[in-house]
Length: 226
Image 1 (cartoon, rainbow, N blue to C red):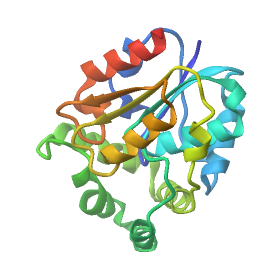
Image 2 (image 1 turned 90 degrees about the horizontal axis):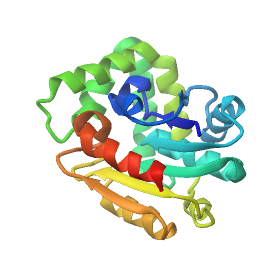
Image 3 (image 1 turned 90 degrees about the vertical axis):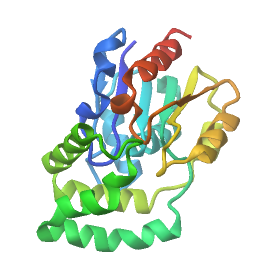
Image 4 (image 1 turned 45 degrees about the vertical axis):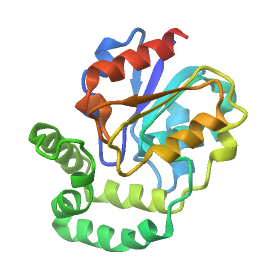
């Protein structure tokens, strides 16, 4: 069965690192870049996805995954939510979006990513290789994608009720030092899907596929084999 992978905000398929090559079966990479709302981005990915598939998303990718589950639950056989959040955007985060968008569109996308976002991503702030990759992915996508993704996150819906009916194999995974999406969000998702497996990746922050690939791959393999 095809596995659809959706990366986080301002990331592309490179965010998954060694994960795709280590997993069995075909991989379909999808980016949440079409539209200005989470529902529009989810619909665009569903349009190009196989009829039935396994589905995994990290951070914003996980938010889009939950919207895909809302729109087409009959198409999703397995569900993996990594370092993500089922709740609507917190007001204090939403309030910062306009300034971030304005900076990015004025030519300071690098500054926004460097100063306001990337320092919170990694367990090891000295991991310059991963930080450089994150910056390169953001530059490749550009300020317009930053604008669309920021607006989509700002207006997203709470999807806790969407998770409750899902009974297929499910994985909830996070880095133990994830600051953007802390432990309580993952405990909540795990409680909404009692059949899910909760995995905490030691030594990782918000990007376990890049920070700690081996245990991340092991958890995903177990999920796919369930």
